[in-house]
Length: 337
Image (cartoon, rainbow, N blue to C red; front, top):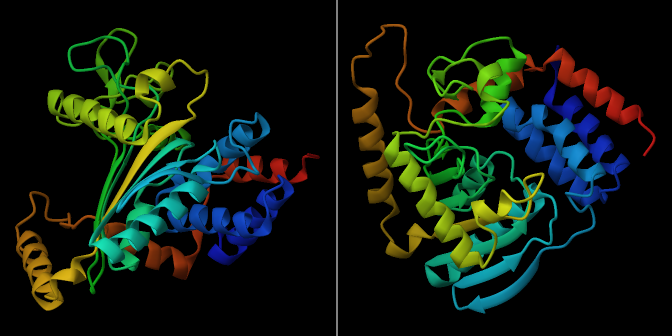
């Protein structure tokens, strides 16, 4: 079905208020879920809302939780999310990191005890809109085998880098698995196979079938052993710097919660050479664009470019939403809390 961004925002706002979020928080939650969906990332937008509400009902996401600063060391701070909604905590931590960067040139916020931030690129864009470079990452439950292993012991630990640019921000948002599990589920909902191998099946064979990968969540690391190593390093950094849970500790829980995240922001204006910075970025993008594609019908994109184009199309034509997801949302709205 097709729905306008405005109507979707209204539906989600009313839904979150129904589930006891204060109006300010409900509005922010709705904005972020709609933004991700507008950018073509339904897997971490509208498709995640039913699961988010399920976690609210189970008490995994604490509706009334407030973010709390627990330590401060100049431009470095530790915060505790107190198991609040990941979107709300991530938005505030990004704001704090950009504020610190504008005071010190660089700022870092280490966050523990939070929940899934949904689409990490949201906070990369937020930082870029505040004229800051960002490096952001989170750990997760174990959902990938370390290279050469059979059982999942490492997380697909999403990693985000954003760079402010006048002609369109550069925003890299990637899981360390070849496909995020939200994306794999997106293919499942559409009844499609993955375009490349995405994980292992029960026979320890690489597969592109979502139905064979999702039950045990054994994702394929990007770059094989390289992605496996990077996953471990990001997990160590997030856990040590936040004094929070590691992927190992998160995996001892029945449901993924109380995860650890890092928000690093840099304020490039301190160098007072914005013109040169923008010229360098534009040169790199132009050089990359100017390559003959293997498939003549393909386009070459810089990180974040394609989602910006999808957003324009969806704003003009409306957002396509899975009928099954919409049906679940309507049932949640009608349910007596």
